[in-house]
Length: 209
Image 1: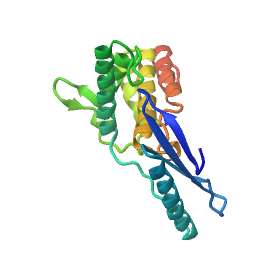
Image 2: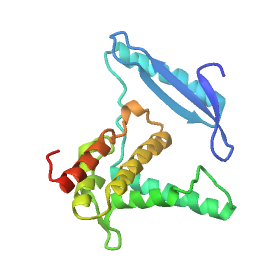
Image 3: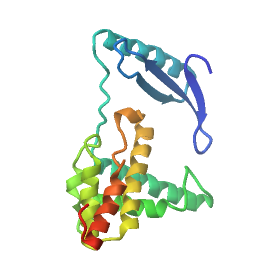
């Protein structure tokens, strides 16, 4: 479509219009990119025009738009668990896959619950990560949790990898839901697998890692 607006069809057949804004600063820094979904094409065009003007004004003043994502890791975990539960229930009711449901949803949900709770029955959260802002979580925080789990016998290597993969899914899904560009909220799991497996081998072989 014209005007920098594209038409997409979401799961379930609903049509949306995606407005994209890209502004290239003159100082050689990376392009500023934003996008937003609309149900109406004209609304998408208006937003694109307005937002482009706002960003260009900031660039001319030597600034960049602030896109720091709001919310904690714990809030995102709760959202992800609710999302998976809802689409599992909807798929069961419909007798078919709904809203991207896959056979892995149940396992994925259990991994998100592990990140959220130390003891779900007692209501004890994993506060070392759940109270941390999404934008602050990093692979070292994640590895600290999976390494501790390995040391305590709470799952083997593959289990820890699946837990890390669940965080990757969560960040991708959260960015899509909140319309946050990946550059503004990178997935914090890059390289985390290596550290997890390394820690396991070190504990098994008694070797430095």
